[in-house]
Image 1 (cartoon, rainbow, N blue to C red):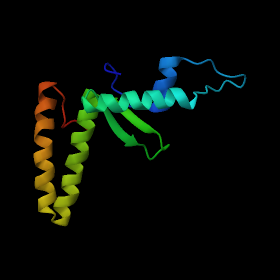
Image 2 (image 1 turned 45 degrees about the horizontal axis):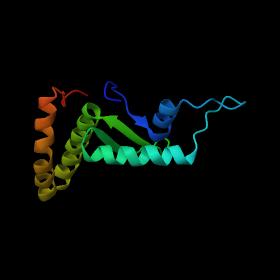
Image 3 (image 1 turned 90 degrees about the horizontal axis):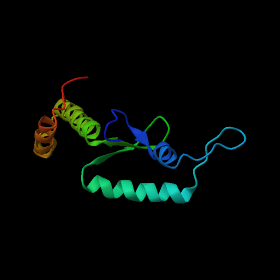
Length: 119
């Protein structure tokens, strides 16, 4: 996932790793046990900030994961948008709290040469 600029859901990541054979109908089925193992492993990797948990997607309800570069940029951009909404609502304390949380992330993004301003 490190070289990828995409997000990937747990099912797809598990299927890529295990490469199960499609059934007679051409459908790839991944059992619950390997999915659980992958979820646990990814959860542990999020603690190191090498993998980012982007939560469940509204499109399909699947949890998305991203590399450090993609995840850090996504998280910063999301927080910037939240700050804009809070500014419009006059929630200064939320903006200040979030800004303090964002500063180390922005410094990390600069170290990794991540352009957080690009759309």
